[in-house]
Image 1: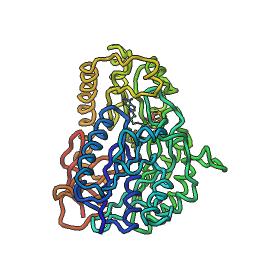
Image 2 (image 1 turned 90 degrees about the vertical axis):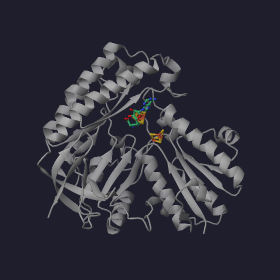
Image 3 (image 1 turned 90 degrees about the horizontal axis):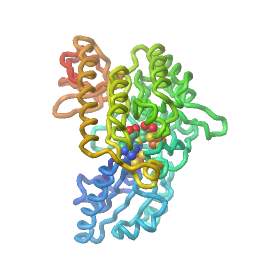
Length: 428
Ligand code: SAH
Ligand code: SF4
Ligand code: F3S
């Protein structure tokens, strides 16, 4: 039987799409392989958000070139954000690739598959693979809006994923109902700018409306969503998180910078003051909220003082999690055209380390408050003989127990905390 291997880097959207592609290949009669070398068909799901990700993709493409020389029948499919509109040029650069298709462009994949004798059912690509044989996860990622209309000056995403396109509300509800029937307990709704959900649909439903509908699905236990945009998140949505019992108390709210001039050059559409006010509103309405953020250091022209503004905003906001990235110039973006990438690598690294140090201390303090407390964990699987799962606030929790906890809600008494995870004992 023919075997496939899907290689994925990048964001949750890529992960969600890889799961769907794998599901499609399963239904086409392929079997999952464990590495490139025992596969007959490989799919590379790529990311180019920073140069480092792009380099990994190019390295892997090189490796596959070698494999294909040895096994000329190997089929190589490439999707994700490496694939731009100029597929002709990509085909010239990577002649060993059999099919290039844009992120989420399943019709293109299916048309190709059809030529290979695979099924033509579009619907198949609406569900993640059911992980036959492997213990399935009780959590599913659900793309609800594709693309991004924002054009932040540093960001390549809108150029690769195109304009915002929402999936019809009824279709998402129907998919989640089906997944809940199959045993899924938690869904995470995905969009580059999930707050824009629905503006392009005939009846203009919004994310809060969607959450309302999903909240009444019987067997579903938890609902999450990401990523929010500070300029778009609405009071209605904050209200929905506060009032709907299945919607978890966790928001990803990328700030990107803590200096107004940098925010302006980034074209983020808000000020530090506005962001601060927003966080206060959220914390007032949802006191148990856990917040995570993204921040970029070393944006063109970022002075020491401007960086200090970012650092002090992070100190003040006390996020549960921070994803920090060094600025990477992306050809084609506004910042690439208008500014010089003039902050030396060492300075970027130094700033990145400062933020990581600060955050380790902040998260250590926040998490230590859970010591001795009981938390509710949705168990997702095992790692090194320990069960793991997350709290509603998205904290990773490990515990040991002989029982079968997969997909169950466990009450865990926390015994040990660190900035990154918690450990405890199950209460029966
Ligand atoms: N839509 C989300 C995130 C998109 S990309 C948002 O609006 O925040 C994920 C993260 O990668 C971003 O939050 C940003 O911090 C980082 N990122 C994007 N482009 C980058 C670049 N050119 N250099 C460094 N980091 C970048
Ligand atoms: Fe990129 Fe900005 Fe869109 Fe996020 S909102 S994907 S950072 S352009
Ligand atoms: Fe990367 Fe594209 Fe996601 S560039 S972060 S895979 S949207």
